[in-house]
Image 1 (cartoon, rainbow, N blue to C red):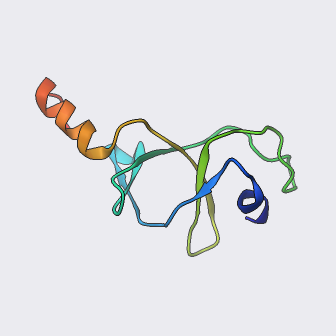
Image 2: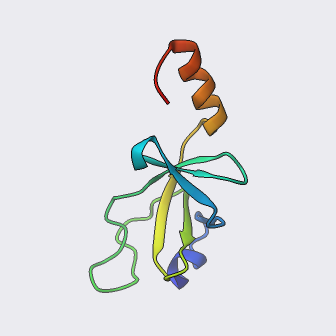
Length: 91
């Protein structure tokens, strides 16, 4: 967690996210921003050393101290739903 908090290109967000789209994304209840979990190999095995310098990630720390690395998506959840409604896609 300390390494994530020290990374200059990463932003800590509030843990107010709720799963949407069958768990494929997380949406912030406060900001309407959409995130997907970053599943890339970020850490060196067994340490807090970064393997790669992924820019622009967000992260949050869960109550059980689980660290989630997230990639913010370009559209808000509201925009995504409006686009789907116009195209007739299911939410």
